[in-house]
Image 1 (cartoon, helix red, strand yellow):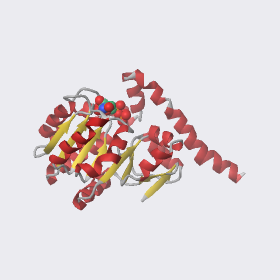
Image 2 (cartoon, helix red, strand yellow; image 1 turned 90 degrees about the horizontal axis):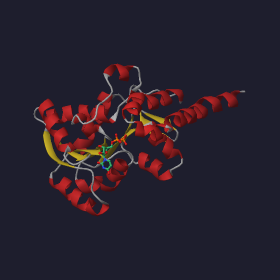
Image 3 (cartoon, helix red, strand yellow; image 1 turned 30 degrees about the horizontal axis):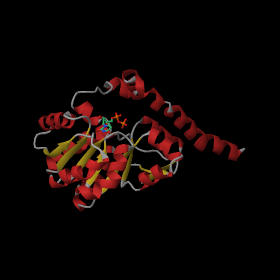
Image 4 (cartoon, helix red, strand yellow; image 1 turned 90 degrees about the vertical axis):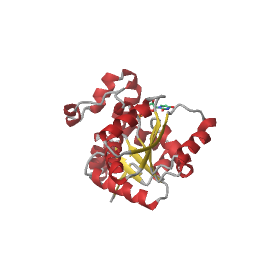
Length: 247
Ligand code: UDP
């Protein structure tokens, strides 16, 4: 089932169902894109047709965070739970270790993807890391990076270049890498490598992860300004408009 939120379709499925869907994509062998969509992406896509097109080309779109889950609810179509980039990545890595999928980590500063791969292999014995590569390469180097990825014969490719850069990269290159699935995962390698901290469990339960990130990285305040704008847009679209059309 899919939910239409501000013109973008989001899959109304649980984490477990998302992992199962990725397993089907891998079985098919054909290239697939996974987008974990956050309020910032959704908001920007309202005034950016190319970003909307990018979201529409994704094969699986999951709600990345409580803001999107709340917005779907207000739009009258609930989604079962949030499926964030890092949580999805960890669940997929667990499945990859069991199913012998080959995993490639592309992105983050030099050294980080390797550290993340080492942490993941010790946590999930049997995990096959096809390869790693940092995310600071130029447009001219893109073809060379593609060829490194392709030669490693990955099934599953995690791309950590930040949103929406990673989604554009996946859009341009997935078919050239030979991977069956590519997932954009933002700052997840930094977290797995232990270079960045994730909010503690109680902060997540209080749904205040955004506040934690703002306090840890105050430079993000500009980006987070989009959160109230997104909330207002959703409220106007799904509550106020209905109210006025009823009266
Ligand atoms: N990054 C990268 N190449 C770039 C820009 C960023 O590999 O050209 C990495 C950066 O080192 C970090 C991640 O992309 O690991 C972005 O993390 P962030 O938490 O900002 O992701 P977002 O919130 O944008 O999804």
